[in-house]
Image (tube, rainbow, N blue to C red; front, side, top):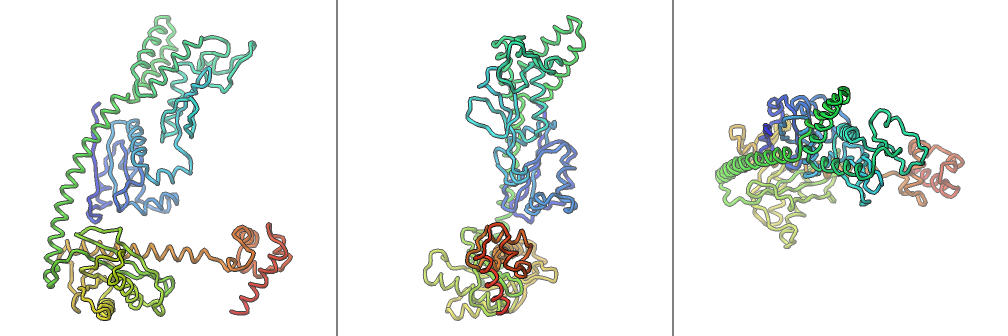
Length: 521
């Protein structure tokens, strides 16, 4: 099978993959696309008649997207695509890649349903083909799963038509049973009235199973013989139907062609991955060399472990600190740490930063295994004030660790490094700018994620949680019936008692607690 495959893959460094530029290069051809997150993990696999049109849709107006799709798009950092010869090849390749990667958004975007299978009900005396969403160990044969339900249903109808398979769910038939419309339309061989014997019918089922296993040759031979027989009998209408069946079967790649196609894809993928790995290794080597020379220019030698810090809060509430670690230019995620601010007054950035640094460095000095080794360089999100605050902690602990501030411009993008009281602009040193930007974005992301998580937990908490006798079920019922805490507080005891699950004791407890709360305020 002649087919053309192409990959557009992201480079190892996130900043090297420009989504907008890669969208411009998408071909107007059928194929499969793979969306990836910033870790390079495949989060969604899809197929398209036109890769150019389909993939671009994800990055246009977000207001037109389903909320689940919007959530997925927010995590896309890069994508790959594979060109196929036909839409059917794209369908089969999509199914193969989904089974390989098990992308989480392929699960989330299917509305909590399983991908369907074709079930051959071999446990029945007269097996038939049905669609099912659950494969069970019940003696039947299952094929799939199929990601395109419409294509799968067409396949069931095609095979049922070709072999005249039973379509009804009846398991037995009385002697005076009347055949259904399928028989009169010649879409069923009429087992209900004894028009076909069991061995002949099971031979058809065997051919269907062989076909679903990937062998289309026997089916095509069968159809050719049938078509010639009908043509010789001058039954041209039936011969034309069989000719259409032959065309439909030929549009489905057989297993040998599919294996060749997938092997070709794998070979190309290996070549691309190897080339990208070599390019990435070269860039990493160049970047590490540039970073080494950059810091040595400040008299900082032997910088191996870099720790970066950031503080996140809203108006001083839910203050948290984050620490990320980079070694030899790569994030060391197992050493990332996060801190909930405990003692810093008012949640000020410099006070919070000092608390985080003190707790981290003190644990390291005390030999805590989770905080070793100690850093060779501290990078602080901020300028001179933040660097001075960090250096005060270092002096108090009587340790010497070089410290620099990651300074942002008015657009909140990395601008330079604050070292020894002076800012070193980075706009003319793209490798260093890219490296520091990556670190600053990573620590900011880590801090924001932790802060949002804590804030979400706090917002979930209700004043009802503190009332004796009011559990989750009663709290849910109260909010559902009355709508808000204010309405619950304004309701009298009789109204509260009428809420499902409530009683006099619980209603009085609510009134007493909420009244005391109002008095205290």
